[in-house]
Length: 347
Image (cartoon, rainbow, N blue to C red; front, side, top):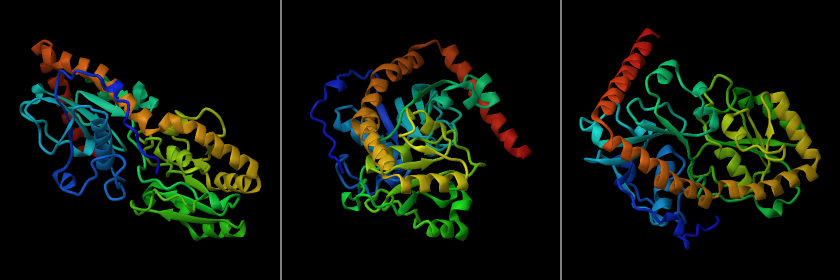
């Protein structure tokens, strides 16, 4: 793991006009959590809570005044993952500016702003019809520091190409890759496929020669972050990935990753990589060059710019703007919540 350096805090010269909080579940905050990004994240990461907490810790290391909480504050800016925001807004909602972070999850109806994972989610196509009509609010693309306990591929493996790995929940992998037929096909090609679903082992790429991650076609991919691609670059292994907007946002050349949609395409890509060590090495070297785009310093720098600029100005406009605007927003979002309940009741 590469140590995170916070020697230069010059990018964090800011005067927060509104207090900033990260809302997390009480049972998560009760854990023995690391207080620096260089700590042991094998137990604290690997979840939406871990993503939110690690971002907050990194910002605190940079000198940003931010506090973790497990209940609503009386006033200020609150950032939280969508599933950790209560279903009902607080009674003093107008004294809060709430930012919903949509990592793999739906929008919170009453949040004034949303953090999304890719450029497609900024477009109107990323919204439902009633979101488009009922004051959808502001959206920003931001990410979290990925796999802080990542162990890169062992250099001693050199030109070996045998171990193909999917790190994640099996439900997020196409079923065809979880069949005996798939394993047998790979076995005939001298390859071995393994699913790693334990969160404390997902970051160990020491024996990995290639990453394979293709989601089921029926699964919602719009809200997915590019984490698996970034982990491949940082681990020093080529990646075979599905056609996700989050990956495509960062694809500058064919060396970034190989895109596939079917098992046949995935098998052809694996054979191509197996038989072409020059291509494998080119993808690995390319990944090393691209790592700066997803480094912890880059990600947190983007957060600092967001906090110091759009977030403070948007929150200030909310708090100091005319009361009728807040009331109109409240009415629109109440209608949004009612429409969601109606849609679900008709299913």
